[in-house]
Image (cartoon, rainbow, N blue to C red; front, side):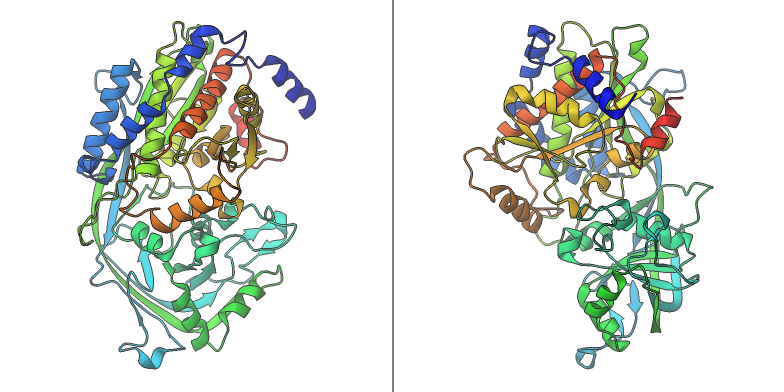
Length: 558
């Protein structure tokens, strides 16, 4: 069947939430999703009592207790790992190693050019201000002395005719640029591909045998300032065990500030600006920087277990109940920082107390149905999203429900706190047929779909649905629309930039009672409609033709 024919069949098969098929049962269930409830749950999850919801600490215990209590109250049943007697628990254990660099002894030395004469120690960068670095190796200390090589964007993409590692860079410390090479007609043009993500760059450096990898920070292209780099990559870092079929990570990974990079290139007799321009060519070849980097990291190691929280509402149909709609939101944030004067709790109100509130609201709406849906619903509150999507990655490697039994995943990461919109933004619009389900669901609201206005920042690869997409599960991830009711053009861009500049990954991301959560309410009701239609129907949404995830989906459904 052609893609067009499949799409037509999908449209015929859709049963709209508001209409003859939904009836008062579905309508009244959807109506239980309210701005007041979202506000109440978000306020609680973002309170200081939850200690910033840091994995492995006191905030995790408080958060997990709260989630279990709410899910049990709603009527969701535990569907995590079984206990010793074979009974399902609420939890999926995520074993990780916590590695914390000693900030007082962390040292990175490399040549510095412009302004070096004014430095008391001209070759030593300041941890936190000029660089951050960590290791994923379980070693009490890391010492590396290796040549510095500029490897452009650090990308190997045969399908794009691109290779930044044309020569052997084993044992080198590679200096890399953030995001995709900005080349018209390649790498998704304005929309970032996975090649632009920092995770890919570190993975590729490891495959190439690099001793270390340092990404040059760029506020505009990264989508966040240096203070976010500092808050996210200092303190405790976490790592999952490296799969046996993958190379070990480089000895260290890290970021350097644009100022430090500018000075490094200047010391090598190069211009950073001109080097960036040269790297935007398939003919680029790695450039020796004529110097070595010396890094020392002392590490505090602790093996810990964090947890995904997993619950289920079982479907009514004997066969279809084995097919699941997976709902997800990450419960974790950045915890506490005792080194910050004053308020050192990263409450993570928007990111992602709102999403967890949404997860609970959707679960309660389905639990309130007078008759269960044909298919089942799985609710997964993931951990360690802020540390590299680790809870979701662990679930993808150890799924509670196999990918071949998972109809779709719907991810909630940061709800709309600024009011109602005429549209919904789909992160990764055009990736799968789930767009059509959402389009049909919002038509009764008089709304339309919009593409991600910041697609160059690669948000599709920055949230917990991505590891599930990699194993083939079609995933829907929305954001606030861009056309706010009663607001002037440009309002959306203004509030997004303001949030990123002032609150993203900062202690100031706190609950605000003046938030207008009517937009979040409408968005969640739309997602409820998507899930309702999927769980009452027989469709298996497909990835769009040519999708990088299509092959994995086809394999899982065989």
